[in-house]
View (cartoon, helix red, strand yellow):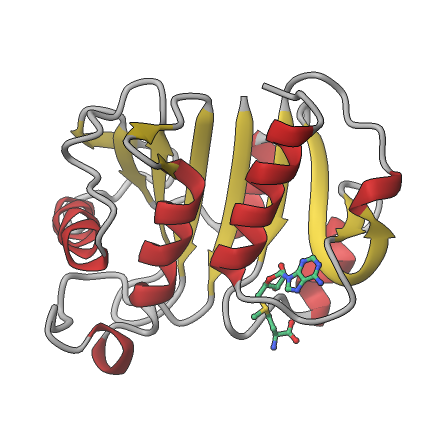
Length: 202
Ligand SMILES: C[S@@+](CC[C@H](N)C(=O)[O-])C[C@H]1O[C@@H](n2cnc3c(N)ncnc32)[C@H](O)[C@@H]1O
């Protein structure tokens, strides 16, 4: 299984945004939609071996985490376009309004779960995976020998990760880099997916 863990620093935690202006009204949920597209979509097919966690930390009611479980998602529900992905996120956030227990996860649609997990909760839940922190300046991905399974990659959004996040992840996740520049979250996910395909990791 390939896992992507994304921290969305400002992404709204309720469906209070406009689908007509995602970048301007949602705390950059447009970026999250593109990241999900990159994580799951192939030309005319869907990556069933991928799981994505996105932790939403914007207003009005943080935190919320949505887990997208590739093996269970019906590809028709998670279309490649941003607006239909944003609608799925909105639906999940609406269900999340009623969750009080921080450890409870509710299945909104097949393979799509919402909870009140924090970013740290998500990382702790994945400590048994081989955890990698995608960061500019990390070890070059092409110099790594990846294990054959259970890979989890942590990424930031347009704001990146904070100093506190980085110190929390020290010793938990190996810092790796895909290249010498700061790339978009969705591009980094595409690169990692294609790189793992090329080196034969399922
Ligand atoms: C747009 S970048 C964040 C830029 C942000 N202003 C910063 O300085 O961290 C989004 C995310 O993509 C990942 N990323 C960007 N460039 C990368 C690189 N060269 N190697 C690995 N990951 C990268 C990181 O996880 C980063 O948090």
